[in-house]
Length: 277
Image (tube, rainbow, N blue to C red; front, side, top):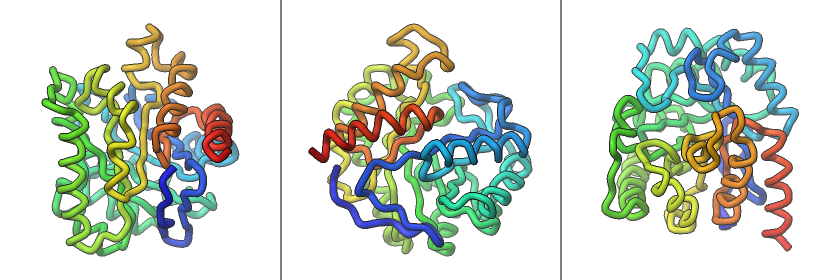
C-alpha cells in the first residue's frame, strides 16, 4: 500500500496505514442488490450502526439507484430519502458519513446536516459541485464513469481503458486542486461503463492509478462482472466479492466499498497482514 497523507473529514481523520472499509447504505427502492431493504429511516440507521460495529470506517449513503439502465431522480426526491438518514447518522455514529450524489443541491443539504465527504459518480463534472466542495472544505471521491447510468452499459468501448481513466483522473484532479479542493480520493468506477474484461483489467492494473498521489477507492461489491463469472445473482456473490476485494487490496486499493462489511473486514485483515509481513 502506498504511503499517503491522512485526510481530514470534519472532526475525523482517515489514515491509510491499513485498508479502510466503506459500508454501502442504499436508501433506495431499486438498487441492484439491496433495493427496498433500507428505504425506511429506522431500518437504514440500524443497518449503518451494524456496519460500523462490523468494522466499517465510513458509511456511504445513497438515495438514487445508479444501476445500469436507471433513470435519474429529482434533487428534492433524493434529499427526501437521504436527509433524515444522514442527519441521524452524523449525530449517532462516531465515523465519517459520505453522501453518494452528483447533485450539488443534494450534497449541500447533506453537508449542512453534518456529512463529511462527497462521493460523486460523475467525477465533479458539475461545476457547482466543485464550488460546493471547495466552499465546505469537503473531501471528494472522484469516480470515473463512461456515459450515464441509463446508457453506460450500452456497448462501452475504449482504446485503452487504463490510459483513458488515468487521463480523466488527471483532468478532474487538476480542476479540483485549482478550485481549492485539498483532499481527493479516486475511484476507477468498476461496472460503470465497463465490460467484464474492462473491470478485470482495472483490478489487475490498479497500480497504474497510484501515481496520482490520491487514495484509491475500489467498489467491486456484488457487481455484475462477478455474477457473469460465477453465474449467480447479487445476493449470492459474497465469495466472488471477497476474491475481488482481496485482489484490489493486494494491487493497491486504500479503501474498498462493500455491502458485506463483516466478511470483507476479516478478509482484508488477512491481506493487510500478508502485505505487512
